[in-house]
Length: 119
Length: 110
Image (cartoon, rainbow over all chains, first blue to last red; front, top):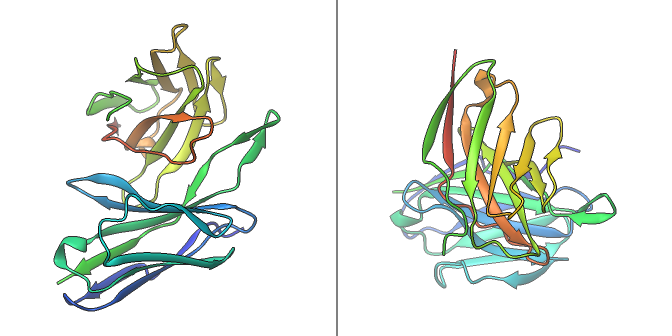
């Protein structure tokens, strides 16, 4: 498996523009997470899905942010309109609950991230 | 609310064991200790996890104290490629979220 795939790897846009980040989780995984990382705030969980259904979006900063998971192999994180303070690295991760010692083990696999710069 | 406390940074000599401490004094009985690391410009990577017994895998060993209030991640033979930020995370059994703190920046020196 190629792992979690994110695109684009880098995105530079101007304030006010719409930005869409994409994620393809590992096949068979039933949880998908979106994180944001900045120097000031570290790694923050934005939202996560279970079986394509959003479970907890309490980390989404404001209404400008939205996330969807139309099927088990694809998710998007959209920012509209984008602002300079949205500049960060956005990570997608998936988890399949490996069966270790008979119990489900939550091991997150992260993508390489999308470096977003909003000018 | 911080569930874990880690030193902000530490150095280690290449080829020596690196012992990374983590305090989690408020851990409850059904919470696991997870360790992840993040190499520069990459996404975090799972290392190991445990409940109350010591654990070992191909990457590291995890030693959890008997009272479970602290743990130590051991990298047995550190290499330059182990230079990374190491995160100690406490996670409930039915909690699918992982909350990352500031972690420990480990620098392995030749």
